[in-house]
Image (cartoon, rainbow, N blue to C red; front, side, top):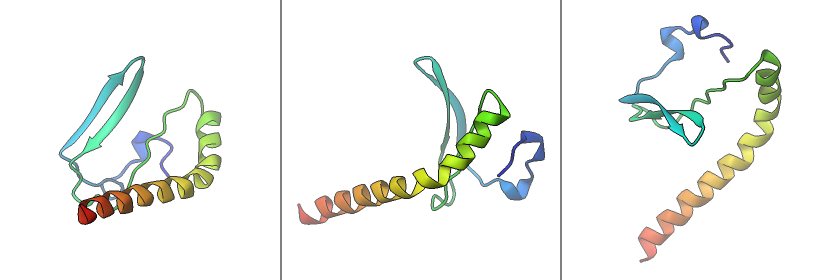
Length: 85
C-alpha cells in the first residue's frame, strides 16, 4: 500500500492503454482500461484526511471476500448462459 503518490516506483505500477478521470454526477472516478494482465486489481483510495484512508484500509479485507464471490458468481453464470444456450 502506498500512502503518497510521490512514493510510487515503476515496480509498483503495471501498464494500461488508458487511465482517465471521469466525472459521474458530482463524483470523480479514475478508470483504468486495457490492462496488460487483468488478473490483478488496484484500488485507488482518495480521502479527505489520513484518518479516512486508514479507516478504509481497516475495512477493506472484510469487503474483498464477498466482492470476489460476487464477481466469480457472475462470471460462472455468464459462462453457463453462453454454453447452455
